[in-house]
Amino acid sequence: MDTDFESVLLVIRECFVYKIPPRTAARGYRASEWGDLATSFLWKGRLRIMSKGQACFIRLEDNESGEVFAVCPYDPASNSVEAVLDSSRYFVLKIENEGRHAFIGMGFQERSDAFDFNVALQDFTKQINAEKQSERRAKEVDNTPKKDYSLKDGQTINISIGNVGKRSRTRPSENPSSNFSGGMVPLIPPPPSAAQVKQQQQQQQQQQHSLFQ
Image (cartoon, rainbow, N blue to C red; front, side, top):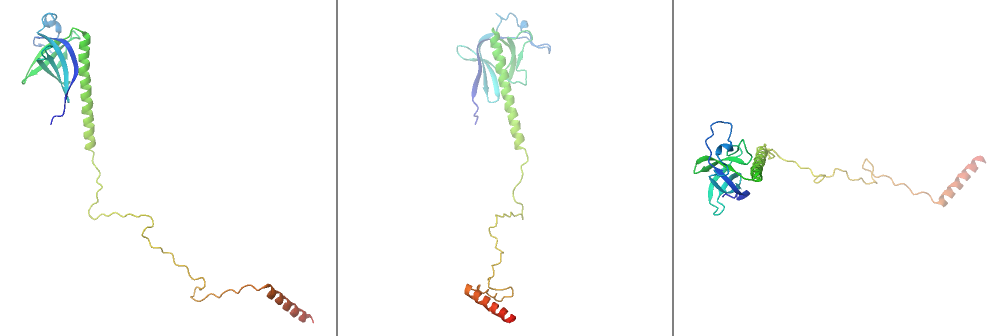
């Protein structure tokens, strides 16, 4: 389904169309060769520049009825619109109808209209070039080889999370009352009381005294 919509880029209320002689050399067209430009025009009416997607066309319409006199598909890469060599207000348009084409002269009375005409076509050309460049960049990104992170046949993933799932290898503490050979460690006797200490001292003094008797 075609989702592009038409948009109006420029409207000029008055333009003139001329019948032009065939170009006999590659030097270009001259408006002075079209006769009296003030009186020899073939048609007079409104000009509209329309765009739809990446297509642009120049429509020459009747000011009263809106009937289309001629349509010029604009292509920046072709000779669909050419400026004449001897004036900034006149151009040559390549019009098409049912597969046939012809060249006509077209001009404006005001230089400001000719300026607006040129700017509208230039702006459309810049927009199309920007869109094409963006599309090329998008295709280059899409064509970039993508890395394959999938597991191949026989491949596995090992995940280690801290010490979860590990068994403690710490040996249980031994009974402080057992020795290294499995026997019992003898208990240390409690310290003697003050009375016992005094009694022992007296006994030692008596023994010493007996030694000197």
